[in-house]
Length: 195
Image (tube, rainbow, N blue to C red; front, side, top):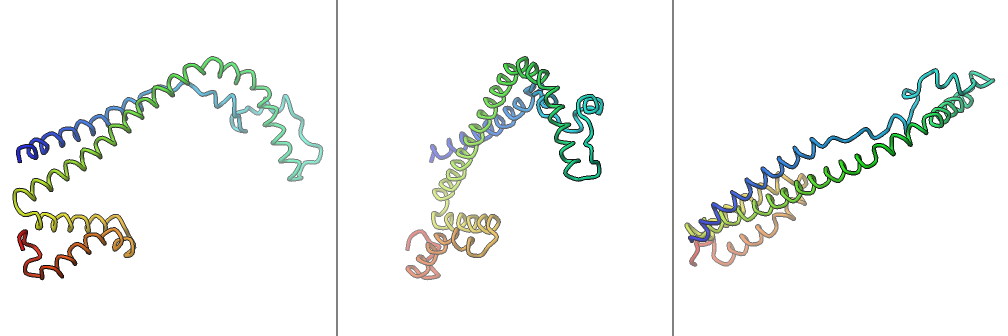
Protein backbone atom coordinates (compact mmCIF):
# COMPACT_ATOMS: atom_id res chain seq x y z
CA UNK A 1 0.00 0.00 0.00
CA UNK A 2 2.89 2.39 0.77
CA UNK A 3 4.42 1.75 -2.66
CA UNK A 4 1.11 2.56 -4.34
CA UNK A 5 0.91 5.85 -2.40
CA UNK A 6 4.48 6.71 -3.45
CA UNK A 7 3.59 6.02 -7.08
CA UNK A 8 0.45 8.15 -6.70
CA UNK A 9 2.74 11.09 -5.92
CA UNK A 10 5.66 10.25 -8.21
CA UNK A 11 3.86 9.47 -11.48
CA UNK A 12 1.74 12.66 -11.62
CA UNK A 13 4.89 14.70 -10.90
CA UNK A 14 6.63 13.08 -13.87
CA UNK A 15 3.56 13.71 -16.04
CA UNK A 16 3.63 17.39 -15.06
CA UNK A 17 7.36 17.69 -15.82
CA UNK A 18 6.86 15.95 -19.18
CA UNK A 19 4.00 18.27 -20.15
CA UNK A 20 6.17 21.23 -19.18
CA UNK A 21 8.95 19.78 -21.36
CA UNK A 22 6.58 19.52 -24.32
CA UNK A 23 5.64 23.20 -23.99
CA UNK A 24 9.28 24.26 -23.43
CA UNK A 25 10.72 22.43 -26.44
CA UNK A 26 7.81 23.47 -28.66
CA UNK A 27 8.54 27.08 -27.71
CA UNK A 28 12.26 26.63 -28.47
CA UNK A 29 11.50 25.04 -31.85
CA UNK A 30 9.20 27.92 -32.80
CA UNK A 31 11.92 30.49 -31.95
CA UNK A 32 14.58 28.99 -34.27
CA UNK A 33 15.33 31.62 -36.90
CA UNK A 34 15.29 30.09 -40.37
CA UNK A 35 17.38 32.08 -42.87
CA UNK A 36 15.96 33.19 -46.20
CA UNK A 37 15.53 30.05 -48.30
CA UNK A 38 16.05 31.91 -51.59
CA UNK A 39 12.53 31.07 -52.75
CA UNK A 40 12.13 34.38 -54.60
CA UNK A 41 15.25 33.79 -56.65
CA UNK A 42 14.93 30.04 -57.19
CA UNK A 43 11.22 29.64 -57.86
CA UNK A 44 9.97 32.83 -59.48
CA UNK A 45 6.39 33.05 -60.63
CA UNK A 46 4.71 35.79 -62.65
CA UNK A 47 4.32 37.98 -59.58
CA UNK A 48 7.93 37.55 -58.44
CA UNK A 49 9.41 38.81 -61.73
CA UNK A 50 8.90 42.38 -62.80
CA UNK A 51 7.27 43.49 -66.04
CA UNK A 52 10.56 45.09 -67.08
CA UNK A 53 12.27 41.70 -66.84
CA UNK A 54 9.75 40.23 -69.23
CA UNK A 55 9.78 43.12 -71.68
CA UNK A 56 13.58 43.18 -71.88
CA UNK A 57 13.92 39.46 -72.57
CA UNK A 58 10.82 38.12 -74.35
CA UNK A 59 8.97 39.38 -77.39
CA UNK A 60 5.21 38.96 -77.56
CA UNK A 61 3.94 36.21 -79.88
CA UNK A 62 2.97 37.11 -83.43
CA UNK A 63 -0.56 35.76 -83.24
CA UNK A 64 -2.17 37.36 -80.23
CA UNK A 65 -5.54 36.16 -79.10
CA UNK A 66 -4.70 32.45 -79.39
CA UNK A 67 -4.84 30.60 -76.04
CA UNK A 68 -1.92 28.34 -76.99
CA UNK A 69 0.20 31.34 -77.94
CA UNK A 70 -0.72 33.10 -74.71
CA UNK A 71 0.23 30.06 -72.59
CA UNK A 72 3.48 29.72 -74.56
CA UNK A 73 4.14 33.42 -73.99
CA UNK A 74 3.71 33.02 -70.21
CA UNK A 75 5.94 29.91 -70.15
CA UNK A 76 8.61 31.72 -72.15
CA UNK A 77 8.47 34.68 -69.77
CA UNK A 78 8.81 32.41 -66.74
CA UNK A 79 11.75 30.53 -68.27
CA UNK A 80 13.48 33.76 -69.21
CA UNK A 81 12.91 35.16 -65.72
CA UNK A 82 14.33 32.00 -64.13
CA UNK A 83 17.35 32.11 -66.41
CA UNK A 84 18.01 35.73 -65.48
CA UNK A 85 17.63 35.09 -61.75
CA UNK A 86 19.62 31.81 -61.72
CA UNK A 87 22.94 33.42 -60.68
CA UNK A 88 21.22 35.21 -57.78
CA UNK A 89 19.59 31.93 -56.75
CA UNK A 90 22.91 30.07 -56.75
CA UNK A 91 24.65 32.85 -54.80
CA UNK A 92 21.83 32.94 -52.24
CA UNK A 93 21.90 29.17 -51.79
CA UNK A 94 25.68 29.14 -51.45
CA UNK A 95 25.56 31.87 -48.81
CA UNK A 96 22.62 30.49 -46.79
CA UNK A 97 23.12 26.71 -47.10
CA UNK A 98 25.19 26.23 -43.89
CA UNK A 99 22.82 28.47 -41.89
CA UNK A 100 19.73 26.69 -43.23
CA UNK A 101 21.13 23.24 -42.44
CA UNK A 102 22.16 24.32 -38.91
CA UNK A 103 18.76 25.90 -38.20
CA UNK A 104 16.96 22.84 -39.60
CA UNK A 105 18.99 20.43 -37.43
CA UNK A 106 18.44 22.58 -34.33
CA UNK A 107 14.69 22.74 -34.95
CA UNK A 108 14.59 18.96 -35.55
CA UNK A 109 16.49 18.38 -32.28
CA UNK A 110 13.95 20.43 -30.32
CA UNK A 111 11.08 18.62 -32.07
CA UNK A 112 12.62 15.25 -31.15
CA UNK A 113 12.93 16.30 -27.49
CA UNK A 114 9.31 17.47 -27.57
CA UNK A 115 8.19 14.13 -29.06
CA UNK A 116 10.07 12.23 -26.35
CA UNK A 117 8.41 14.40 -23.67
CA UNK A 118 5.01 13.72 -25.24
CA UNK A 119 5.57 9.96 -25.21
CA UNK A 120 6.80 10.00 -21.62
CA UNK A 121 3.79 12.11 -20.54
CA UNK A 122 1.45 9.60 -22.20
CA UNK A 123 3.24 6.60 -20.66
CA UNK A 124 3.36 8.02 -17.15
CA UNK A 125 -0.23 9.26 -17.50
CA UNK A 126 -1.26 5.67 -18.19
CA UNK A 127 0.77 4.47 -15.21
CA UNK A 128 -0.89 7.12 -13.03
CA UNK A 129 -4.33 5.91 -14.09
CA UNK A 130 -3.38 2.28 -13.39
CA UNK A 131 -1.99 3.27 -9.99
CA UNK A 132 -5.24 5.05 -9.09
CA UNK A 133 -7.20 1.96 -10.10
CA UNK A 134 -4.91 -0.27 -8.02
CA UNK A 135 -5.25 2.07 -5.02
CA UNK A 136 -9.04 2.06 -5.22
CA UNK A 137 -9.10 -1.72 -5.65
CA UNK A 138 -6.93 -2.27 -2.57
CA UNK A 139 -8.67 0.38 -0.47
CA UNK A 140 -12.26 -0.49 -1.31
CA UNK A 141 -13.38 -3.32 -3.60
CA UNK A 142 -11.69 -4.91 -6.61
CA UNK A 143 -14.92 -5.75 -8.41
CA UNK A 144 -16.53 -2.37 -7.78
CA UNK A 145 -13.37 -0.63 -8.96
CA UNK A 146 -13.49 -2.75 -12.11
CA UNK A 147 -17.12 -1.73 -12.57
CA UNK A 148 -16.16 1.95 -12.38
CA UNK A 149 -13.29 1.41 -14.83
CA UNK A 150 -15.65 -0.47 -17.15
CA UNK A 151 -18.05 2.48 -17.20
CA UNK A 152 -15.16 4.85 -17.98
CA UNK A 153 -13.95 2.49 -20.72
CA UNK A 154 -17.38 2.38 -22.35
CA UNK A 155 -17.78 6.17 -22.08
CA UNK A 156 -14.40 6.73 -23.78
CA UNK A 157 -15.28 4.16 -26.44
CA UNK A 158 -18.56 5.92 -27.20
CA UNK A 159 -16.87 9.34 -27.38
CA UNK A 160 -14.07 8.13 -29.68
CA UNK A 161 -16.07 5.89 -32.03
CA UNK A 162 -19.07 7.02 -34.02
CA UNK A 163 -20.32 3.69 -35.39
CA UNK A 164 -22.15 1.18 -33.24
CA UNK A 165 -20.01 -1.66 -34.60
CA UNK A 166 -16.80 0.05 -33.47
CA UNK A 167 -18.26 0.78 -30.04
CA UNK A 168 -19.32 -2.84 -29.57
CA UNK A 169 -15.93 -4.09 -30.79
CA UNK A 170 -13.86 -1.91 -28.45
CA UNK A 171 -16.18 -2.56 -25.50
CA UNK A 172 -16.65 -6.29 -26.10
CA UNK A 173 -14.08 -7.42 -23.45
CA UNK A 174 -15.96 -5.40 -20.82
CA UNK A 175 -19.33 -6.79 -21.88
CA UNK A 176 -18.02 -10.36 -21.93
CA UNK A 177 -16.47 -10.02 -18.46
CA UNK A 178 -19.68 -8.71 -16.89
CA UNK A 179 -21.79 -11.23 -18.77
CA UNK A 180 -19.58 -13.97 -17.37
CA UNK A 181 -19.96 -12.62 -13.80
CA UNK A 182 -23.72 -12.28 -14.26
CA UNK A 183 -24.09 -15.87 -15.46
CA UNK A 184 -21.59 -17.34 -12.96
CA UNK A 185 -22.63 -15.51 -9.76
CA UNK A 186 -26.05 -14.06 -10.53
CA UNK A 187 -27.22 -10.46 -10.23
CA UNK A 188 -27.05 -10.35 -6.43
CA UNK A 189 -23.41 -11.46 -6.08
CA UNK A 190 -21.82 -10.19 -9.31
CA UNK A 191 -20.59 -6.95 -7.65
CA UNK A 192 -19.14 -8.62 -4.57
CA UNK A 193 -15.46 -9.57 -4.16
CA UNK A 194 -16.10 -12.83 -2.34
CA UNK A 195 -18.75 -15.06 -3.83
